[in-house]
Length: 391
Image 1 (cartoon, rainbow, N blue to C red):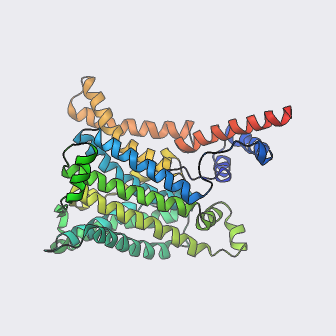
Image 2: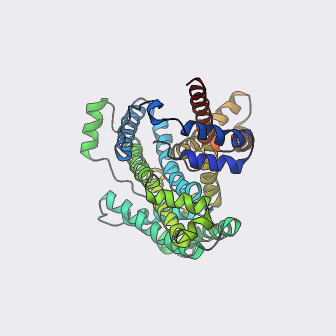
């Protein structure tokens, strides 16, 4: 999905991050912005934001089909896992990257979506799957609205502490109401079978067999693409600009008549809706909704994913989620190849992930996408300044 962080937003982040880039980029970027419009390169992309995002959505859909049809079933399963991580990370990007609120409770919101999906699918005659996923979104949104209203006046570590209580306490409800929610063992989820239209589609596209794993991977990919399309348009709208104003200039925004609390609650609600959908997809892919799947580790993993990828960027959230899914098995295989036993190789993965996080914080404090964007903006500014000096 397209990268949605504005240049001004990037400059503000780099100023907070400190370092050489934050001292050089604003002046150079300003020089570039001062150039006449006629000297700028014409883009082949549509000028309309909605059309650009529709084009990216189409490219993403084609890329997902190609990827899922050219990879083995195990990779299909990993890609299905990637989809629910990326959906939740995208929602967290709105909350943390765009609005400046820190949440450690998104794992609990995913649990709400997962248990809602499991309960609806356990009925003798379950509703259609889109309606069940919609119910998961609505339930998580309601919980997110309650938490958002309660935490609207909190900031920084106080907000993190409040959401931490949510992450610790909410999965415990499954143990308290064990007759309904299955206790520590959780609830088995009956994933619906693929429709005949899907089998016909796969047969026509690649001739491969339409397995249930592939069906769930496609389902996750569809949810991911729709979520990112909606979030991308939301971020580029007046709502996204207001969120950035609340994040970057709180006093100025309040003086301009912006209700800070209401906009923070709205960001929390949108983020909770994405977490609810992610929880629903997780329940379908894993086929289990249990408290052990929604611990604080899940919330911290989502937070580190958007930090490594780049705060405020949906592309960064996707890259960070991919790192969460593909790095551990890669490192485990590497450790096994070095002669380590299975236990030692499995313990190597969190260590390497921690090293990657530290290295990213030192050498790319704006995240992978944020750092690449800064380099591109700096290069563009230098070229514009050079053209101005020659002219």
